Length: 88
Image (cartoon, one colour):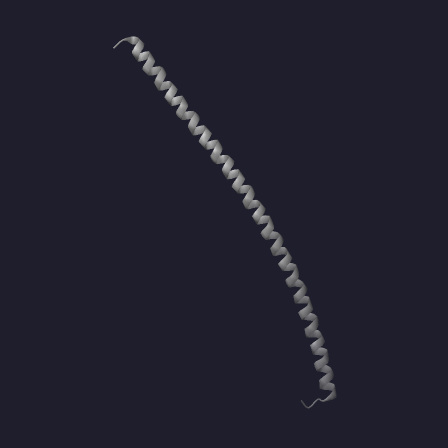
């Protein structure tokens, strides 16, 4: 075979490898961009869940305080009932 054919084959091979490498890098960049976007969505969801959990915790604490106050009031009323009628 003539030398010029080997040169053409070598140039074609270099071009094919170059195109393949570019395709790999572009695919990687797209994948990274998708991952970043998904991570942002997950962070937003986590922040929202945290906010809801904190709100529920605040409500639970308020209800616990109300329950404690009601138990104290019930104990006072029970003590008053015992003073009025100690036999029961």
